Image (cartoon, rainbow, N blue to C red; front, side, top):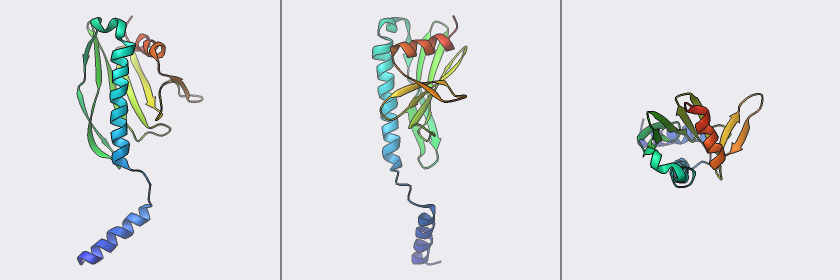
Length: 149
């Protein structure tokens, strides 16, 4: 196959796939930025009164997503005594949202989704998806639900 034939072959494949109209680099970068901003809000606002009692760390995570590829993003680790709560970004290719973070504790887990203009907590999935805006109060409720008493 000549270079021109190869070029035409690839162009045909690309056209068959259809233009998705999504700038994946911009979407990935917006996702990473949104996660950093959420972590800033958590540490500076939601944990403000209790910050002295919490060890905060930002371990690196490698995520692989279709259409985006491999990228690095930070997790948020909150250590309180002998217990750790981990905020672990799942990705930005999420149905019904622009991103998802799973939150793991000793007693369970929670899910936070980024809707592009705000963060919400998934309160229930069935029979219908029910979201609650993430704020200081809902953040505290997440911790109470997934941490040991």
